[in-house]
Image (cartoon, rainbow, N blue to C red; front, side, top):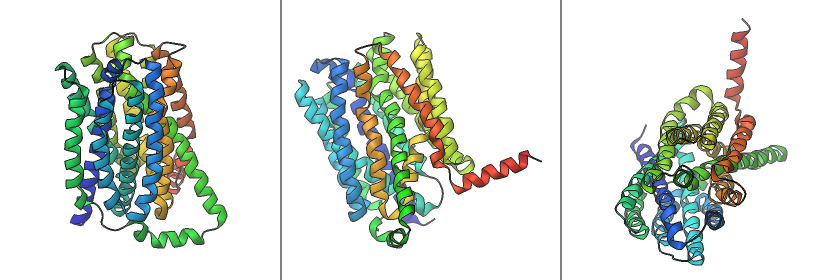
Length: 403
């Protein structure tokens, strides 16, 4: 493996970690910001709709820009913008200003997320083996780091704006320093042959590809809504339902992010052995069991175990959906990833608003029944990821079993 490709892979790890840290820094400061602005869970849920809307728009913009300009231009630019925008949600003292800050931060985060995922698809293709889950693992590492820093600053009585500004300034430096290692070739140029082949393909084949992308997007919405619920409500669940102090409650999200990291570090090897479909199906089923424990348990230790199992189950799901979208048509990797990621982030960043709305009618932990249902649906629909290698593997297993 040549040195430039290894350097590009390392740089991709850095950007995923940066994105996870920036988002995690916002997440762990949600309880403090909610209290300072003086809003209810339901109002917070409504404001998260705007964050999700901003992310969705940013993803559609960044997907097309990445296909035309190349990731080496778009990824560092969006990394700088997202880092600079992190401080904005920490400043407002009224709901209207917070709404505007969340829209801007969401837009910048969406741009960074889809551009780095599009670059990751090209790195994975160059390596010729599954590596996408490892990239997403470093996103989770960023979440763990943010949880640790957030717990420390909360214990020290620091204002959210101070910690968010410091993290944003560090993020700008990291985004600029890592830019040179990204793949220099424009994806649009590198994919010329694939694009020519796609144009010559029958209309029915192109239609099937487009339909499959939207099925992947729908599954991403369900999976990432579940992930967003953990991001935005796990700390509040321990604090409000089980009575944990704020410093302890912050570790609910940290536990979830830590098991996601472990799962994603293992997922690439499991994908190579069992296929992406199996990872999605059994991962979603495991997540359903985990969130069911959170829903019914009155004990804090069991809630931590449930959030851990929930994170472990979800860990490999999103990388497989993004990877499948990016590889469906190499000439339009950015656009396809933006569709799947965009609809997914509508779930992740706006979907938790549904949880907030449901708290009008029932307790917070009872709203998690919705997440159980979404995980079950995802497990049933995982066949959309079935590949030729999966079919060959299944045929061999059946043949071996009939002997």
